[in-house]
Amino acid sequence: MEQNSNKDFIKQFYGKIAKNEQSSCGCNSCGCWTNMSNEDIAQSIWYWENEIQNLWDANLWLWCGNPTWMWNIQKWDTVLDLGSWAWFDCFLAVKQTWKSGKVIWVDMTPEMIAKAKENAKKLNYNNVEFLLWDIEELPIEDNSIDVVISNCVINLATNKTKVFEEIFRVLKKWWKSYISDIVLLKDLSKEEKENKELIAGCVWWAILKDEYLEIIKKIWFEVNILWEDKDISERQYNWVALESLKLELIKSIK
Image 1 (cartoon, rainbow, N blue to C red):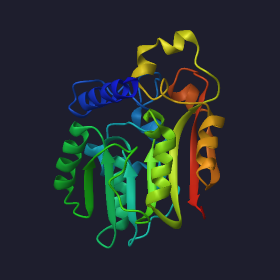
Image 2 (image 1 turned 30 degrees about the vertical axis):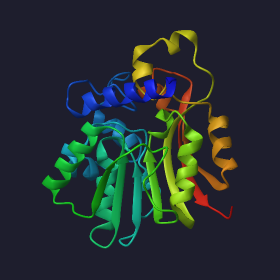
Image 3 (image 1 turned 90 degrees about the horizontal axis):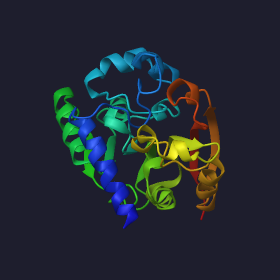
Image 4 (image 1 turned 90 degrees about the vertical axis):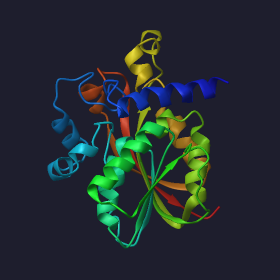
């Protein structure tokens, strides 16, 4: 019952952001806890200026890293994007695969899906599919995906183990997933747990880094930590004890 309540809250909150009915003080948003500009923060988490400018209308400034930067997506790849906020990473992947590959974007928020389809039509992107679904139970065939990307979304999942099990299931053997996500470096204080901005954002739902990595390793992924962005705590989260963890996960033999 509590899990369903959490998901309903997340759907409603980010649905309002998609419709411009809510300020984007959600996951990784720029401006809620910082004086830095959106563009400066974007470049601090591996987005190039030309990427931001070329896809300006597709950007709601909701992320903590750039998973498409971590891997050179090929033109023939089938890429699965797990709800990376506001379809921005999805469209970057579309540009990299172009017409030879395909990108599948899964999100559980109807308003986000509707807005993504609208923007894809404007940009004339045809090799992309948008699925309204829960990332804890993907409507994707086993061993069918070349690359899975996700940008600060898994921390919102009520069952993170199930999400990583699903990533393992859909990936082809020895293929990879690139994840950017918020993890805690210590438990939140009582005051932080009552902070409405943290509840609305990714922080309240995040888990400790060691717990996060242990979940992944138990599923037989080979895990490479590409970067631990601890400075994001100061830049975007008012010194809450957290970091943005950038991971490469390789599907090994199970």
